[in-house]
Image 1 (cartoon, one colour):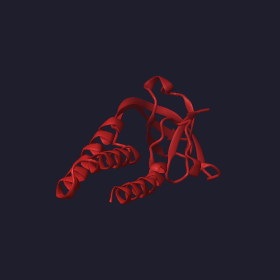
Image 2 (cartoon, one colour):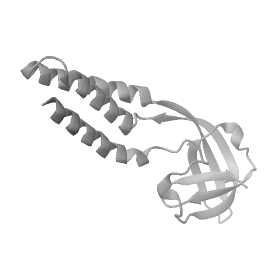
Image 3 (cartoon, one colour):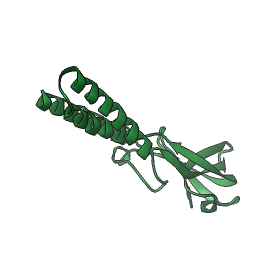
Length: 153
């Protein structure tokens, strides 16, 4: 029974771990593997406003899943019968909550408003701090239709 619980937990963990590619970017200089080779549209423009923002990061799926697996496996070693089932479920719930809490938090970010040379105005929120850009800076706004980044020229 314990072996079955461990194998099942490991399979769940591996399945959820494949979702790790959904993690957020830590900076405009960070790219995920699935972005390599993906064409981006680049437009030049001028920064018209910069403001500091706080980026709330929800708990990582991987950290939550890892906590659930570890907690569930630990709980499955306690007691027997119905008590063991309750301990497994309780351990999984507690582990998931702990993993989520450890991976949650706030990250410093910046909202950069750019007047594009083509006439449109766009605002992009990304990791960084307000000192990364100044009003009047020339920048490129690169987007692949999913992720948009602002970088100085």
